[in-house]
Image (cartoon, rainbow, N blue to C red; front, side, top):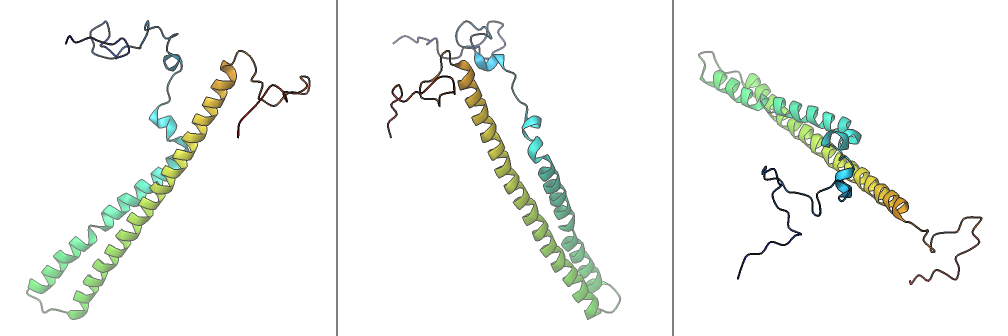
Length: 167
């Protein structure tokens, strides 16, 4: 069986760069997506930029606070294995600071993850609305003749007999 290449499958471009070519003649006029400039990631993230910045700050603080228990372990070792007599109150203070730092780290991480979770929801809603608006605008502008099922304007009369929708 011979290998045949279907014209619908993307092939490397004529310049030999290995990139896919547009289906059809390769003109931008043939491909509506090529005619419209795309939106960059930076533009997409504009609605949630503040939330992402706050989440990054909280995560950075969480990482810094996460070092405190490690420092506390080093301090405990210094107190226990040092030449000076051991003071129980100092050991308990170091342990309490370490435990408090762990709880604070957990709270900061939880806050950061919660903020990014809600930012994700906001971004999805924003993108869905934008796509729906774009699709609706594209549909309205691409029709050559009006849809008989659209609500009539005041000058047209009515579309009662021309439109039969099921359901």
